[in-house]
Image (cartoon, rainbow, N blue to C red; front, side, top):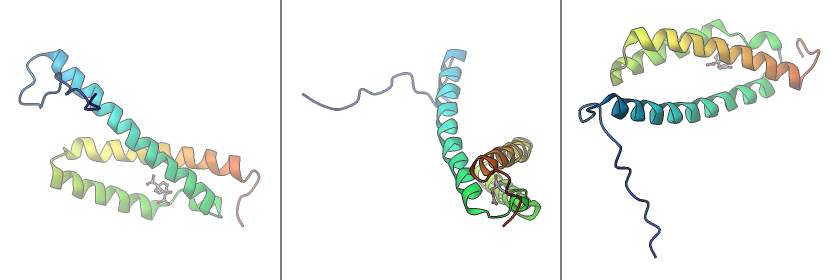
Length: 114
Ligand SMILES: O=C(O)C(=O)C[C@]1(C(=O)O)C=C[C@@H](O)C=C1
């Protein structure tokens, strides 16, 4: 009896993919991995909502530009197109801020600041 996991014979790289089924199998696999990373990122919005005492600190323009600058630099280093990286992260942060406001208000109803 072995507990070895059977290799996934459908796996491809971008170079070995021959059909759109091959491409979509990989895109779906990567999307699942991205969702898992975003769930982890989202969990830190819950933590930020818990830690920030003042509702006005949720939207932090200076930190937003710091995050974007770091992402754009890392995207260039790893080869992600800047025309994907910057707008995707701006939208992601925008949605994370909305989520953080909801989490803050659920945790601290009626609290504008402490
Ligand atoms: O760094 C923070 O203060 C966060 O809450 C995280 C985050 C982000 O999504 O990266 C979200 C809200 C802030 O306005 C800035 C950045």
